[in-house]
Length: 328
Ligand SMILES: *[C@@H]1O[C@H](CO)[C@@H](O)[C@H](O)[C@H]1NC(C)=O
Ligand SMILES: *[C@@H]1O[C@H](CO)[C@@H](O)[C@H](O)[C@H]1NC(C)=O
Ligand SMILES: *[C@@H]1O[C@H](CO)[C@@H](O)[C@H](O)[C@H]1NC(C)=O
Ligand SMILES: *[C@@H]1O[C@H](CO)[C@@H](O)[C@H](O)[C@H]1NC(C)=O
Image (cartoon, rainbow, N blue to C red; front, side, top):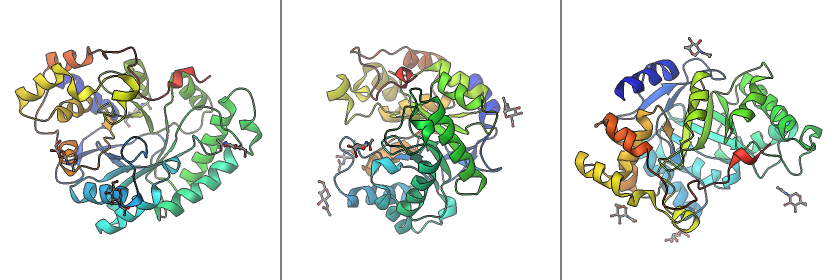
């Protein structure tokens, strides 16, 4: 598996270079400025589940993450908490250029060229920054209330393409150092590649031992699209009630964690890392932040990697978020 990992890293990401005390970064390809490096672990800030009570908690989480050595923050305008995210970044005192900020357009806000351009202004304003490191289309689906005729049709394809043109313009003018997509399946990516313009640098998709679409990962890696997994720990504040399971309680994972003398979350993140996938764990707890930043001092064997890949959700709901495969 280390061999496979070496292969994936060499082909997809080139050299891995440490970005802070212990967290490695990988270079981005396609629509990414030369030299842009993305830390392999970033703090998720989605305002669902038990994460968001008030702005203070979000600001504190971002601040503690950066103080603990984290350098990547995953945000979205639709999370409605970019103002405290921006405050946490400022409060850390860490220079803006040392921090990697991802934000996203949509999915509840109107897309298409013109609406995306104005949404991007709000993204910069709420984060209180002059650029983002990575800007993504959050969801491949249709866009309500868009003023763009491309988004009024029965197929969301034209809307995706019109929105991508806006991201290309934002990238070209320097507003985003890299652009990409999120929740895109192969056929959604095909709509972008068939434009013969810029290719996404990143695709951000739900990915954890109970839900991992390896064909999609391989497709992205073939195109040099860096695969960024969200809900890497199975979103334990949401999945028990929504899906009927808690990944962190899985017996196999806990046995492997004991053997390596690490937390179960570190085993899961390590598994994803060895598959060449960048992760966005979300937490307010500083102990958990430590786990989420430290999974580089041990390796999983081939048989451990295979055992984790073979895990099955104990209910028939292995996926936490809605399935983009249903979007035409
Ligand atoms: C924010 O929410 C947390 C958890 O509910 C609470 O302990 C804290 O007092 C709240 N802070 C503010 C400023 O409202
Ligand atoms: C679209 O506009 C309608 C009417 O103003 C509103 O009820 C609805 O919430 C809007 N949808 C979105 C996704 O913003
Ligand atoms: C992927 O990136 C590598 C390294 O820059 C390059 O040699 C290769 O041609 C790229 N492949 C594709 C499909 O773009
Ligand atoms: C943070 O996580 C640790 C380890 O899981 C736990 O012992 C502690 O109670 C948590 N702290 C808070 C404030 O929830």
